[in-house]
Length: 179
Image (cartoon, rainbow, N blue to C red):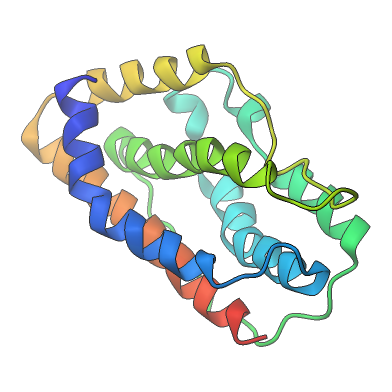
């Protein structure tokens, strides 16, 4: 693990744990609860993927996106309407450091999703959670992040963006858990 990756991991550990705890309240063996879990993700993934100039960091950003997979899974589940309109998140991603911090969260969630997908009941859609990507893609992203975050100010900017993404996921989980 590079020093930069270690700092990102340690600097977001508490936020990551809060998000994990917020999403742990969903019963993924219950079809309706699983749909709410996916909608809580979609509420952030869709606008983030649209706003994020990830190709500034990784050339294959378009292929890494998972928003369409969320659409597929939700179309299969046909979830109930949104419990309440979420306030529009405004994503300011002007610098490569901000993009890197946000990508760290989005692409890192892919790793956890594959683990979660294994516990889903048979017949539940899992395209979004089980979206396979070789370990080399994660390593490629970490190498690019490491190159971008050499200066303390860049690392701080990436950490702030990562915290903003984690906080948005936490708020979304809380909103959808009430559904």
